[in-house]
Structure formats: structure tokens, C-alpha cells
Image (cartoon, rainbow, N blue to C red; front, side, top):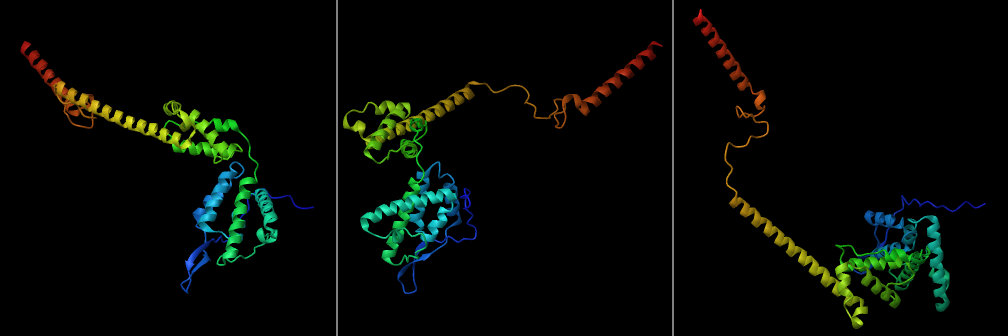
Length: 316
């Protein structure tokens, strides 16, 4: 009996991932060599790959960026795929191979040459072999995009609203990402663009929406025109807010100045500080605990006692 497929992420410690980089050889000619990945790049990729099932398009975009930046070879591509679960990796490889087989039908190539299952040891310094490597990378990226079926959820797309401080460009990008994630529409297709226009018109903030809905004619269905107008409203709002704050600060300063001029200076003794005695003006105790006041009270009592003794003596 075959063991069940693993569903945990594979451990890749001890394996050196070394993408390709161009350098100058000893003969002065440019050569492509292997240079290790930066650890922060690998950590960022592993973190992204964990969300593959929830956002296959986003993960594929991240891999496409890494491929363009690092030019990983065949072995590196397998190691990058190891950041997925084993089940996810096998799904990606299957879909990628299916895409390669479809391409081979028209080119009459052998699938083993186009999508090898073992390291073909392509030499990136040979133009033909470098082209084969890049085509293999492209099949993997496309397989990553398509291996996980999309969960269609139009309500999630309609739930995307522009935030009060969100720029029009950020809002449009948010709509595009939601369309890729939750629908089968391509934001770059004509159908996708028309849907984006409807969403942008209906889900912008109130002042922007009111302004956009006043546009008539062909411009009302042109996304770039709508975005430019939205930015104009947003910028004017920001400028109006800044001017309003300046006016408020100026009014507050003027009122404070007038108050200082109108209010007479405070009369009477200066205010006591914290822990300052009202009797001796020293710090560290209050009036009812003042030792000088206590001595004064005792002296007055003593004086009054002496006066009574003298009075009695005179009466006798």
C-alpha cells in the first residue's frame, strides 16, 4: 500500500537555494553564475506561499516577481515549490505539465524536453537552453495561477468600498485584486474593465461618486477619465481640509491673544506649589503639619498660661 500524500509543508533546511546572476568572467565576457538567495527573500516567499489556497493569483504574482529578479534554475524552481504543501505542489506540477503538453501539440516538441521531470542541467549561458529554462518557469507560474479552482464570490467584490482617506488609485487596485480573487473576470479584459467602471462609479466615496456621476458622453465609460476626475476631487478635498485647519489654528490663536489682552493680571498672593506649606512657604508638608506653626501655637499657649499666673498673684 502506498503511503498517504503528505499535507504538511516540506522542510528545506540544509539546502542552498542559489539563483542565477550575471557576472563578468575572467576573460571579460559576461557570464551567468549561481548566487545564493537573500534570506529575507526566502522568508517573504515562504510567508506568501502559506496563503496559496486563499489567494493563488497573489502567490503566482509573487513567484513571477522572484523568477524575474533571480532567474532560478530547474532545481531552484522545485525548492521554491517546496514552500507549498505536497498536495499543492503536485497540483501545480500537473497543471503546468498539462499546459506544456498543449504547447507541444502545436510545436511538435517532446514533452520531456519542454517540461522535464528530472533536472535537465540547462546551461543559462547557452541562449537556446536559457530560453528553455524561461519557458519552463513560465509554465510553473501559469500552473500556480490555475491549479486551485477559484471560489466565485461576487458579494465579496461588491463589498469593496472606498475608504474616506483611501486614494482613488489604491481603491481601483483593491477592486482589481478582488476581481481576480473572487471572479472569473480578467480586470484587463473589455468585460472586466466595464465591470470595474460600474464598481468604481458606484462604490467610491460620496463626494467622488457624486462628481463622477455628472460626467456624460463617452468619458463616462472611460476608466482613465474617471480616475483622473476622482483624483481631482480627492486632491481638492485634501487641499480644502488643509486650508480649513489653517483657518481654525489662526482663529484659535487670535482668540487666545484677545483673551490675554482682556483679562486683568491676577491679584493676590502667588499660588502655592505642590506640597508647599501655606504658613511657612516651605515645601514637604502642608499647613496643618507645619512644625513652625506648631511651635508658634505652643508659644502662645505658654504666654497665655503665664498671664493667668500673674493675674492670680495680683488678686491675692
